[in-house]
Length: 576
Image (cartoon, rainbow, N blue to C red; front, top):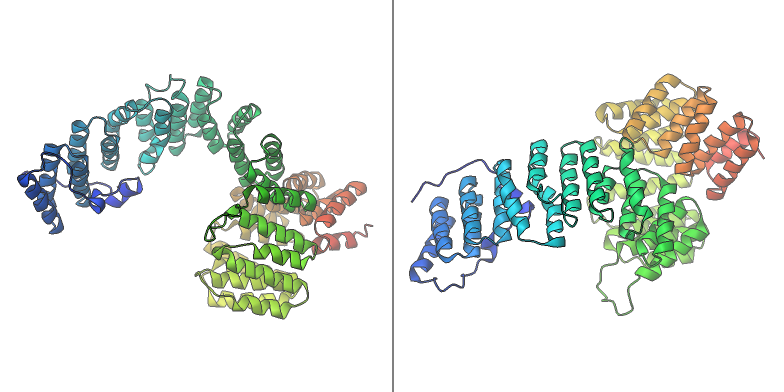
């Protein structure tokens, strides 16, 4: 027998993660007329050799049997034996023999492709890719083209991979059916290689080939970024024509990620108008309406979603509850709680049938008790809740702290967090929460010490930069330093309206009223939050725009009548 050559190859688990599974798990005797006594003996010896660790003999015997029978199952078993031994060249030998014996086997060609990638022989992947695509027609081929990037995602040299894929698809880019998918795949590979402009160029070419094709638009969605505004423009051009609601929802998700809430709402309303039975858009609309404190719109949207998504009466009793329904019931409970309709809130919480949300439901019940003046009972309810997951202990602390904050029991919240931070010294979130609790008690030095320690330990924890910068600005301390801290936070989260609010506030404290107004108006437009309303109103008041300030404050009070920051601002300025 020939020597069993070993070579460097990505381990078997990598190939399995890419979609390959060893045949031995479901190995059956191949049904073939050539399966005589000698062949059966050869298979038996091969398996015994594999189990005893003699992979070289096992491989050669299995490959010989596969070639004699031309059995796909035996070829796959030979490949699996080689992969288990991390013998890449032998695995490739078996896969190529398989592809030669069965030229129409896509399974064989995919093994060849993935083994070549594992061996880092990227230029050799062009031929099996083309052969695989040649076995398909029309939309099946376009679908296969769209799946190509997943095979190359772990390649180290992404630029070479992008060039190889482009070469492999050179015959497809002129085809009106498969060309858009080919350009989208080429663009995706360029994006993986860090070439955003090149990816956008590919998306444009795909769209030019067939303006109705969705693949280039999906790529443009992935490319959406302030640095590439043309990507969003391309998406919008496509959406102006008739498009599936699922595609528009993809755009909504990108807008939500960018905290562009008003733009997202406009898009879901467009879906509601054009496709009223598309349930997901109603759920998003309801969520956005609640963030705006628009109770009537939120209730209508959420009830519409429930009607569209709720299971029929004959649904199986053990059916897993739709996640969207769970979210909708939580939000409907929110609405009831805001109106102090405690029985109605309990009704919606009872409708939630989700074990993973059991602790969250218990927390909501506790919050409702606290709002009715039963704080001790609420805290006891949280503490008695079972801990089914490792993170449940932390969740329970957070819930209890929030109860105390909402009840203005700031000292008790501080003490609870201090104990939790001492018990978990490496938990940065506890450190941050303790700093915020200290700030609430005017323990400014302790707050600053905790936040600076947190920044030193976790330089990427941008919330700490923002919190420290805002606190300094609010106290008119070291304003240049405050601005720099908030700037760093904005670098990490440029569209976060609360960090924008902090920057607007530091500009106000620095006397830059016009700049503060612009920043705060942008923040409030993206997130009409009562605290942002308080700051924007104060800037407008300082600019002698008192009617505008009062209008903003009125909106804020309508959303949150008890917001401390907003009420303190109005009282301090003696605004009616």
